[in-house]
Image 1 (tube, one colour):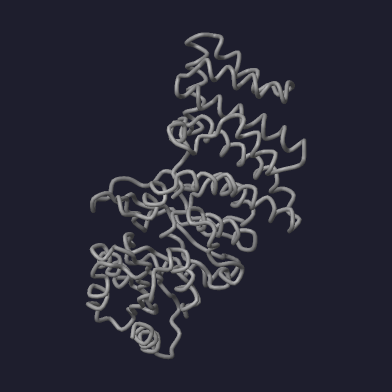
Image 2 (image 1 turned 30 degrees about the horizontal axis):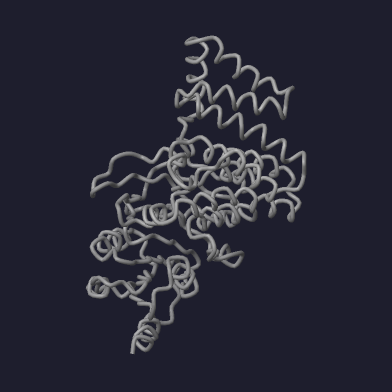
Length: 387
């Protein structure tokens, strides 16, 4: 019966292909679904379809979804719970639009012209694979602030794909509900099922190998923070697994860069890996959990990740220096000195590490100077939100 209902829902979509498909995955989010759907239906550009992908929710998602009378809204309920990544991929497979916008049922668009702006640019620039904008933090129904990590400048821009990738590999700065993707990008790859935490980050990076990336400076989407969000659930359920994916990401992108002959991306990937390792060693978020990385664990991981002794020393130098920076910010100066010395051991000619080490020996003046520099860089001893 359920399979027949799903086939009927698919058949009722008609034969005309819309320009855009919105995929709205939903699980236990019936109470937030109307806010999301109404934000899409209010768009000034009208040629789109909405696929509500109900992953076998135990709440009243079905009743809420069927309450929308707009013929562009289509409700599809899975026969069994697929998990969020398979549900995303199923929606992508059913999408008929030339562009695909995946937005969770707990997020929403905040401007009625966002779709028109995205389309105008991407229609004029076929070299652009996806467009995005900063996200507005939404807490208990109230907009609080623009998410700092999602801001890439004060002006609209089109970034060269691989130049953008060299920065993106350090952290995911694309808020997932803000991204509209050219359909051909998903011919390169859909969501990898073994990456429940970082799958979207991986795809943003992968697409940037092949396409340029468009950025709108105005925050035109809301990213809702609540206890039932996928981000919170994944971190609560398996912080160690999330951490492992973050560490693996730069290595995966490095492998792809090497295979495609993009040598200029290798150093950014190695530097990004060092930053991820440093977070797991020193940042407070991980030091109180099983995902904390000891020096011994770091060395074992490094031995597995690369067989090149030059790469290992490159990463050791930068990992230990970055861990020391985090200890400085956390006012654990003894540990900071220890880790600066570890860094110097592998690169004794690296003046930057010597300078940082001696700054700590200058008392409050040197410490204050170091913390001021860290503040300018935006480092406060914690790894960034992954968006």
